[in-house]
Length: 415
Image (cartoon, rainbow, N blue to C red; front, side, top):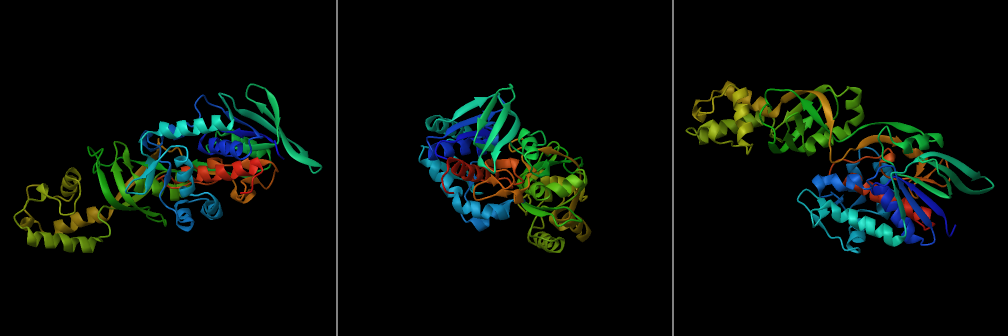
């Protein structure tokens, strides 16, 4: 079909990018994007603290897919077609340069998400994409079928009706997503959406007054499960956050939802130490620095206020000299640091990401074209699929990749 009428439902990263790619690949296509809110690309604007974590500097597809708790197997082939390096090049060709931070996250050199929003907006306008805001899709009915090319009648939220030959659903994956309602009506199975990338509510005196403190590397786990993660930890006024917690929440999204977000959390603040190896290390410090006071110096590189709190919880006064610390007290301190356990009593969504797991069942989608296996002419991209990644730019990369594949296919170009 040389001049298809293409409708994209959802003005987030995946939908916007798909619309651009489709219009760029086939200038004869009439591409219209409908965004139900007044603010397309809203998540792009706020992600990464307003800097937009565009992607991650992980360029080997087999390594990249390891960052996706759900969808990694399906994305392997997709990443061979459109991966982080391709997105970096696409942006550079349009005047947007990215930089790589120490942890691999990639941001625009401007440190301003508006740079990405403006690039996408300008590319859509240049390609001829019609963007309609505050207007969503209420109902979709397939027409055509076995004796003709696929087509759809759409009813918009203002009751306007229109016809298209290609339809992309890219509305995100939360329970209120209109795209999931449409997908269900068109024969698709929906994996129940539950939150991913969330922080933990913890009410524990060990954390009181320590909000804002970051610990460079910890190991976190959920006793009784196989869930284990590592990385930086942030103490907040409601509990714990940071990459280690967010990664654990992503991999454990379904298990933790089943526990109603009430579960024990184990933390080793000094990995790879065990209690025994840390006890030996602390005994060595006692021998080497007998006259130093414990409260004035942490031999483990832990933040001073946190170190003082661990001393207090171990019954050690800050003014105590190392020579005066008994073996039993050192053992208690070692246990506090390597085997702490906290009670999680709830969660908060990570405001920069709003990621869910769940969505359209992946076995019902052809990941070469993102086309439905149930309904010809229907495509999916982004978080409306049961695909989600850990924090660090991986969810945006899945959006760019699935959007690119869908855009190519809807334009009639080989993926």
